[in-house]
Amino acid sequence: MITYLVRRLLAAAGVLVLVALLTYWIFFALSPDPAVMICGKTCTPDRIDQIRATLGVDQPFMTQFFTFLGGIFMGRTYGSGEGAIECAAPCLGFSFQTNQSVLDMIAERMPVSITIAVGAAILWLLIGVSAGVISAVKQGSWWDKAAMMVALSGISLPNYFIALVLQYVLVVELQILPFPSTPAFGEDPLFWFQSYIMPWSILAFGYASLYARLTRANMIDTLGENFVRTARAKGLSSMLVLRRHALRPSLTPIVTMFGMDFAGLLGGALITETVFGLNGVGKMTSDAISKNDQPVIMGVTLMAALFVIVGNIIVDVLYTTLDPRVRTKVA
Amino acid sequence: MKNLDAAGSNSLLEVADLEVSFASSAGIATVVQGISFTVARNETVGIVGESGSGKSMTSLAIMGLLPPKAKTTGSIKLHGEEILGASERHMRKLRGNRMAMVFQDPLSSLNPYYTVGMQIAEAYKAHRGGSMRAAKLVAVDAMGRVGISDPQRRVDSYPHQFSGGMRQRIMIAMAMCCEPDLLIADEPTTALDVTVQAQILELMSQLQNESGTGMLFITHDLAVVSQVSQRVLVMNKGKVVESGTTEDVFSTPQDPYTQALLDAIPRIDDPIRALKKVEMGMVSEA
Ligand SMILES: Nc1ncnc2c1ncn2[C@@H]1O[C@H](COP(=O)(O)OP(=O)(O)OP(=O)(O)O)[C@@H](O)[C@H]1O
Ligand SMILES: [Mg+2]
Image (cartoon, rainbow over all chains, first blue to last red):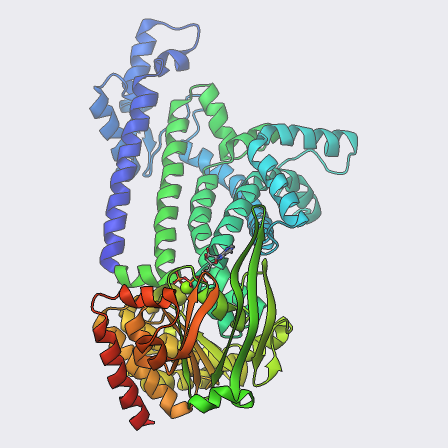
């Protein structure tokens, strides 16, 4: 188990460096000159050169990349002499737009994205999984048909479309919900809940649809398994057969998927945050992309990759405890 | 022994005019067409027939485990009590308790997520109640009885950690843990290699001798059926084409289908000679 973990962590580090290299190449090497952007309209060639030197973008690509990578582990100094700017490890650089530290920007917006992700995850797990289980057990019933119809629409309708319609109906017309915003929980829990419920639901709808269909399919497969027949042949109650013998094999793959989806969401719910104007990592990313704020894009990409990779490892380790067949192989 | 089955009142299981059909858009497929037979205490009745002849459907009908869309008519009596059409609640009390079943493929028939001990224990606990811990002790005991060495330790192993033969022993332990009156074995040795197959057959007849369980033994292997059963039914396309003592059916088959089945065995003399030996051996043992 320990060697397995060490191996996985080393591989993860390798993947992260690769992701960093690729993102760096795409955004820094292929994008317009950041110095021109920072310098603004009234700009002299001298000033541009000066900025280039401070940013280090006058260096060859690989040198830039390793400076960036070094900054993450050891911190770095921008420029030299009087105007030098210290950036402590883990240094992700500074936004071209606001000059704020990218790390600080992410840290500031993380709570919003986490709140959105956790709330949505609870909703979609509860609704998606139970709808799927009921559908599988009552396969072919009106419930099954209706649930699967809804799920199909949840998968095919674009998020932002539903978001805009809901916002119009619930907030503008009926006025039963406030405009989504990101208040703190402590001040007014009810208002906090009302503000987040729409983003949660919208985000959860798509995932719940997917999870319901997957759970249903898994469950139907499992119910056809020989061991379920054995369980019935023992005289176990149908509830016990379902709960003990059918549910667990059906849900184990869902755990894997959930780990990945949730980890991905921690990197920001891009569309949902943008549509509702919630100031999380996702909205920050879409802003950064539209304004070509390369350090921010870079930082967010790396962070999202880190979440997904760590999530992947956690899921795999969890899997070894969930599935005895994998357990013996790893141990 | 032969007389036991003729006297209906002594019968453990009486199946009469059993019919199983599936309705589909293509029409009604009758997969079991009015078969009748009995199984007495301490007796083994074999059902032979090629793939698709309706053997499994017959056994599942007895257990009440047919898929919901299957339509079943006729009569199935256990200890003289009609169980065809009995409530699910009632059937649940019988399954695993009064009648139990061993399936063909022991690996897929065991849940990979739970220890074998737990899976045996839950069968016991379902009918005898008590704590899971107490049931686990019964499981250890049951595993020992089916010849699994070091059951104390193996009780916490998972199905994939056993060999095919050991898994089938576990299935047998599970089926026998509540001391059922009737054991239905649906091709219990088909997935096993020949030496292991012999061991499992040996184990089953030994357990039967100890407990007096009546057994319905389903197989498509004539050699196996000749070894284990006193009486045999030959099934073809959902019908019983021939039945009688194993000896009669094998030495003087009446039905052309049975003759063809026997002819399909490379050396026709062998199974009959083997059969006679085994039959005599069993009689002297009993
Ligand atoms: N759900 C179903 N709907 C319709 N027909 C079915 C269904 N299940 C099984 N059958 C048919 O019932 C017939 C009998 O099947 P059964 O499983 O009893 O055969 P078997 O004698 O046990 O064969 P095998 O030796 O392969 O196990 C087969 O022709 C099969 O196609
Ligand atoms: Mg069969």
